[in-house]
Image (tube, rainbow over all chains, first blue to last red; front, side):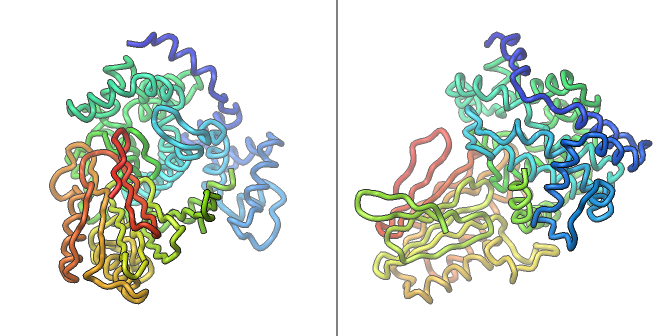
Length: 283
Length: 172
């Protein structure tokens, strides 16, 4: 077992999420807050506004006219898109690095995070939870934040983890827990607590591999899980952990995902990937 | 095209073949590579006589289950349409069915992903079905399990290299 306090202390080494992004995250998760309130928050932060306008004016969006204000950007792209861009932008510095231990090169965890966020968003639309779409997007984007810290400990203990996974039938997250004393879900939830994420967001990060049976009853967590396994199956930047997580067919049945649906979602993700690749270059 | 690296003898190039893509080459200093394969299958085919080869990186077994996706637009997403188009393109470049060396890697699954949801297994079955139509055999395969893989093909030597995380690489 590793010194767990030593691991937890390393949360401080992460690039803290900007306060404005946390506020926007909280507002966007709250069904009672209005779109205007969110736009107001963005406008109050000149650095964020400048960055956002730069992104909105990039060739990616191909807008017919230059966007010069947040109101303008919202009018052209819609507030949902603007919220996504702000949230994505606020965490890109942390995720856009290589990741020792998980065998991921520079930008690979980022590609996985953004792709799974888009898959999750599409699943939310498909399975009728659009009122929580920002939460679902954010949760999919941030679910592996614990890996940013746990990576070096995984690297150190990799042989032991690998044996448990490939000789003793452990899932990768269970093997992390067994060998290191903590897995990337728990560590990610601690980051969420430290950064004052909402309770629901912390819950999803903590349970996104659905090891805990009660989490399998939760629709939002299930959709994040499903987005994650779809990315794993498609090989979207899976590393040393590969596809070594547990599959729960009863969960798919519960939310009415058939084999054909699963294939259709994979096909749809593949078709969107080029667009996501362009999007990744904006951050 | 891919990144160019100067080697002792020539300028060699490496070209990535992303999922739902296929690439063919007769450039002897080119290496085609499909990185990060999960349930999909990376398939290298080489004809040493014709000096031509290619890599197909498909992710789904059956274009008729595409549900909204147009297989004509994305033929290389699927085993059925992808393998047919891949072989046709190789034959057009002068490859002959009897010369072909086929190597495949991928078809992995999530732990306990059995039955109808095991897309990796379905991909393998679909691949075998399609190859049987052309009487083409598989020379070597690294299939199944829960690890992701990468497969590359050196056009000049016809050698395929399979990399599986945590294992020795296989050169065939």
